Length: 361
Picture 1 (cartoon, rainbow, N blue to C red):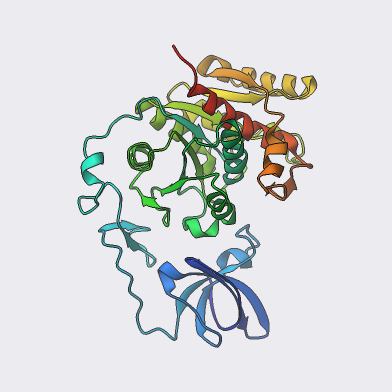
Picture 2 (cartoon, rainbow, N blue to C red):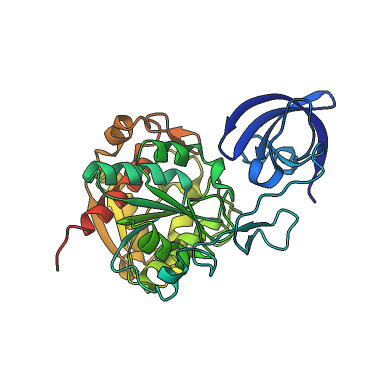
């Protein structure tokens, strides 16, 4: 069951578009909290607020902060989206959005019969932290490429939670964002991954889409009980719509957990059971010992029969991230130096997807 606590805002540490980070005094504690203003409005010093403290109390990875559930200084809060599609529906936090494909949207006519991606490459990721290396390699290949990031609802639901995407947009590495499913807050809202993909293609005019969940991933230490299974579903959707799906493999030789060493079991099961269509698995050209382990894992899991494999020279991924000011990026607490194979694998997927645009039959 969830846990809630009431406290007083003692400090506002950061104010962003759609997000406030605050410190809240709860009895004799100072707790870090996020205030999603689309849901709860703005907060001020001295405001009494109700916090959802569940994940922090359970020592789960939510970034180490609570969430403002309601500001007791507000008798009401109302922001009209102009749309009728509900996200997080049938829950106390449901909100309305103007979905791009809705009849009241200016883009409805363009999407009414849209059922194809016309060959658009789609990079399907298993973790949020794979977006940056994929985008960096795409922009290094061609700075004029238009990239859309599609955020699914496998992790964080509010897009404003992602500092990385905010930075990528500021630097022009991501040109448009689409939030689909129950995620919200993108430049464009979509009902599901299928309409999210055609929104990226038809409305955002993207050359390439990168699809990944928001920050965070749910796992249970079982083969199928994790939100990264959506990677396979994204591949299926992209292929069904005539796109060209490319899988970003979650590769690590620094993760101490056996299930995530070499190729994460989450990636293997997503591509084995979740992907009902063929894709290209982009494998970075790693040192021979590491490459052998990776290829053996793909073979042992039967993935080289189900999907295509391309070895991609992605050594420029780390320098590209430095060039774009992303040298401090990390995944699961590990930096570029700690786990270069992880970032090169995502970079390989981005690079190969970009190269697809220049291939001729």
